[in-house]
Image (tube, rainbow, N blue to C red; front, side, top):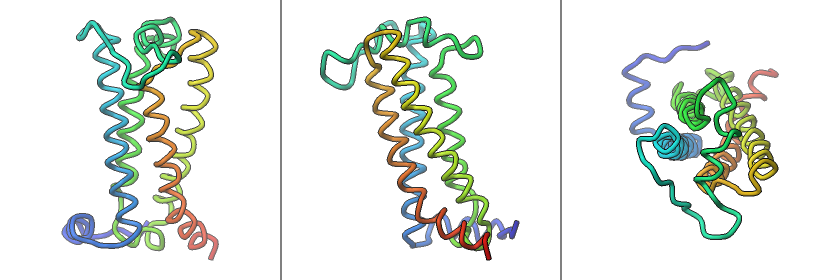
Length: 169
């Protein structure tokens, strides 16, 4: 892995201008939104707040029912939203790692980000199916997070494609 000096990394990430950096900044922002969504649901799932109103209209959504159900507590003996916080944080970290030219200098980083983003989207879709099958309702917060994951997956492709080409040469 071709390392970049910390001062150069700081300057590139904060001041650099490129399509890749713009997409990475969007990915970081969206991932932090996803983590915040996980945080809000965690507050409900751990009893810190007593109500979790839906953020999307419609009869399909019942966040309180879904996020208090067996479905939401079956993984790793914890509320599932705490895992959302971790996974979106990891995505933000992958987007933030490396300099402006990481597709050629550190190509594994954009490839890892794309793999993580597409895995997350597939997981969100699988979980939505499970939510519906077990609860006949969806968590609106989680479905907004699915949209975050879809956007992140799409944003990851251009840089990952260039990185894959760099790895192949």
